[in-house]
Length: 105
Image (cartoon, rainbow, N blue to C red; front, side):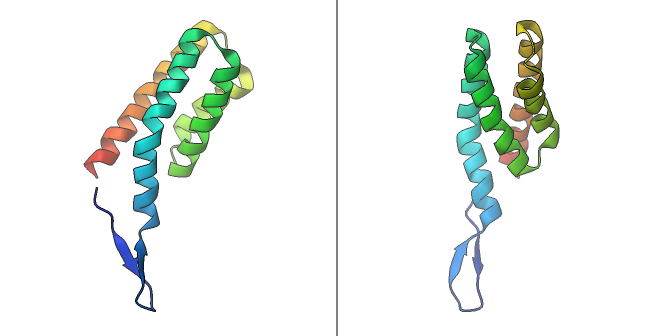
């Protein structure tokens, strides 16, 4: 994805914010996802809450409300290990799908 620039009326150019947000998403979300999955695998509830909150913010920024809803469910309901793993797998699959789609755009 190339950096697109917009020109202001005064002739100055600046990076297109939507392109920059997508680049940040592509850069940071894989790390967030790995940390989230690691917390689930370790059974570290506090870390799961922290990383689900962090990922939820990224998903809302991008408009991926279905993923944000799953992450909020974790924060609100604090599911047991089996359900948490199931939700985590759904989140991982959906996030990977977003990364593939954004790479193609």
